[in-house]
Image 1 (cartoon, rainbow, N blue to C red):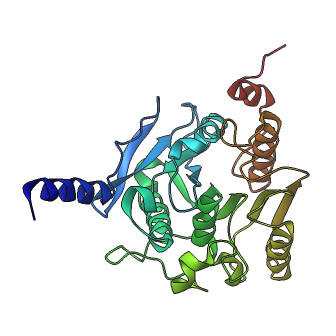
Image 2 (cartoon, rainbow, N blue to C red):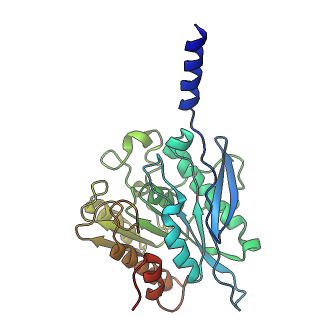
Image 3 (cartoon, rainbow, N blue to C red):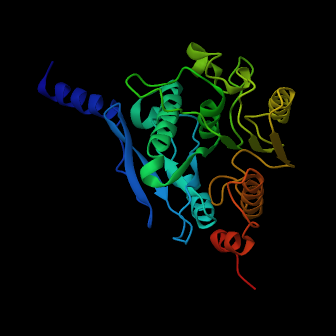
Length: 300
């Protein structure tokens, strides 16, 4: 092979190898590595609530971004983190491996989600967290791996301390692709691990209370899928709240991503807040003025 051909081959080969992006930064947040996998440092970006007089352990929530297990950014849930931390929760935005950044399959994304929750619970003492009140949320594929932490088993990484639970205590799911069966989303990419990887196929009586948001015009998750998921949980005595948004499409809940609308962003967070109040993660009432401020709406 000539020198030019070798050079071109080397360039193409290097381009084909996924490379991790530089760590994200969030003003006011603390970023810590929770795992190293596929030659990548995976971070949890922590938003602490304002310092107050109470020294009681605080509940927490961990969010996973969407992107079809292919791409995405933890910044997707930054507005949620800023609102919920101001309301009193410790909020984590999690990195995880994706096909574009790491060349990894959905199974690895699910494993990273379990690792992230285990890391948070293992550090509950130093971070003054209530290890029995760790909610997990996410959108689309992030909603899938969030649901995995609450419903599925068998995605623990080798070498982790399995005496520390990776199970979510509550689920906050935004148009989650949580039915991965033959007629569900992404089956061809997860069939090697099906049915274990599909939350809709693994309901049990220890499922956590769940809230789901879905648009009726979502082309990835039919409304019937969400209704069947809710019915399966309720049949087992699990609280399962479903909120359908007429005419809304996939990603409708985002503040500034895709087809998101400000009104949907505000309403879904308000309902999330109310759900968390009912579980005693939060107290008082949703802060609508703060929501308007975060959403960029003008104040009267």
